[in-house]
Figure 1 (cartoon, rainbow, N blue to C red):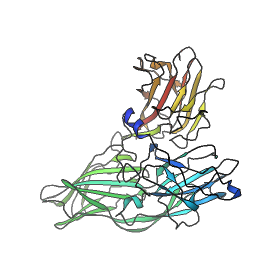
Figure 2 (figure 1 turned 45 degrees about the vertical axis):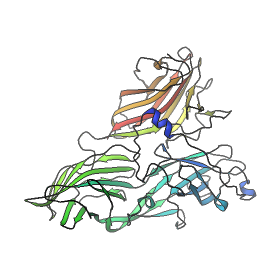
Figure 3 (figure 1 turned 90 degrees about the vertical axis):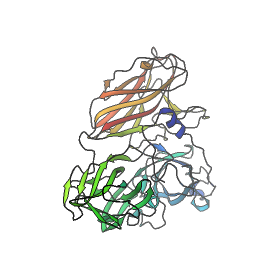
Figure 4 (figure 1 turned 60 degrees about the vertical axis):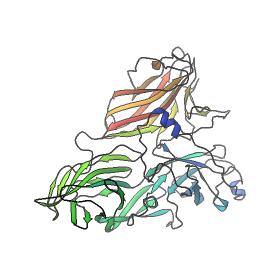
Length: 479
């Protein structure tokens, strides 16, 4: 189920992806302490992208997550523990029978969830093993703790999952002196295979149990496609051995090679022979997906392990453009009679971010329509705006901010919605929306580098004569 969704999707396609159906949970009365009503239901996203996960662009039917409902910090006060919630493949999760979670009658709760579900937790610790790679979806560890401050009136909650491991992909072809790569086997030699995920904090630790790990290999004309999910960490001087019936080809990873959680590293590889022996020619290639792809460099390696290394896996000179922040505003009910306020809405797709109103007399809200998914609404003839704080851009350069804007009237000026980044007014493009309630993409470049970004969108009663919608806010940068 390899994920191949691009973060750089067109606006129309991104909007289409966000349309999701809801699925009712089976009812379970959990007793008076849980109230017996207000059943918890969930939609899902990974890194801001709805209904997708590591090994494909959709969840499989009957994929299961473990869910904790709790109050307070960590998992010291758990109201529902490790309940199994499953999906029919659409990314909407529900419980069955005794697994159904009900909200308490009063008060708010938080949810922690993980994938893949298991009954073999050690307390609130998930054992992780990547020793066997035949079923990648079974070892793609995901974690979510963004669903906080919810109650039985909150509606369907969105669980925004993050990958906790790293993914490495090779496309392997035959080169000079090699007839074909049929029957290829690829092994990462002596790499750590076990760790523990603390579900209270989302921290992965305790990497141990070094073993040879055989990657998953699939025929893909004209060569072989090789995938592995590995523990994040330092892989300096580790070797990758490519084995054919005709011989072996060894690649020694350069010093300072690291594979990071949430990132995918892709390489085009040619196996060839020359006067110096069997060689591995590695050339980086790849596109940004819901994992952050880090293209590989190039290196030639002799059979005996003698190495003439070029750049190792990593961004290379100048870095790679990556998504720093993506917010698509989730899936509010288009039929809701009460609109969600910016500061209290719980369906945001980004995590660890603070959202707030800029004004108290008049305010923006989160809404959807029958034809437009979740977005921010800025009503006409009012001073309104909203702020997004806590965007981590540490180490990123060449920052760009993009968003989509629509208005309730054709010809409304784009520049009516002003933008500040870290208090600095941004230069906006001229022009107008071409049609009523039709999104127009806007991209702002030259954003000043800063490790922590705050973005403000705002308008005035004088400038806003139509009513505007803002969606698909994204920051990209080079790392």
